Length: 301
Image: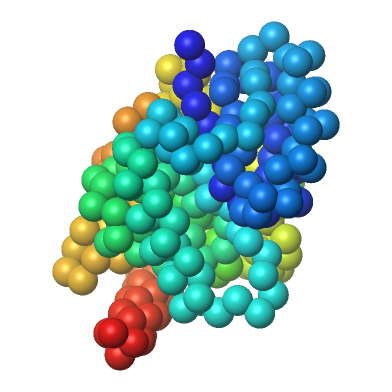
């Protein structure tokens, strides 16, 4: 029996993810949970197409499927006028519904501001922190990996890039980026590499520009890569959004082990002084946003 992947989101994003899953044909029971009942018949063509897949199936689900899910992917709603507060309120209702129906799988956020949604999902659900994570900067890490491979004229497999923080404001951690066994900063001292500090600065700026664009397709590809690693029983170290149970608790993207049981912290993140300052500033901003939302929730009671 194949594991169940629940997909919760609007039709446009859910159908895009399903189309990519149809191509990969992973051994999955894909269950779509439409946001509205009017979306249900729109999935019929994808359900029919899945009949051509030897391994993957697609169907529209019901509330009883929450209790059978191995993973549940929460996509953006794409509501232009939705405030962060309204998204958190909506998340609270979703978490209540899935918990009441016995959900005990991995809750994966594939969308904007997953650092805040992951935190509030942890707070509302009572699920272990290891079972709640978001794609974070992993899609951008993969993008940077391939860009570096092209720039340096090497295979992508030998690049170990590190991008931390949030998907909207990624921090390229050059001090933790390697080419084979060597830190990339060693290339700056190699005259034959035709690669210098200016190139790193330009690449950081390029990554920030890419982060400002639509990352939906990159996220789908990153999610599928993590699923493939899971089925191959080869868990990946990836910079995904995860819960940091410090005081106060927050969520941000840092390298963790992503496997069948969720995410697992390995070692403390060690960055250069400048990178550490940038990361600390982001964490401060995330904690401030959390406090503001929690304050509004208290006032609304």
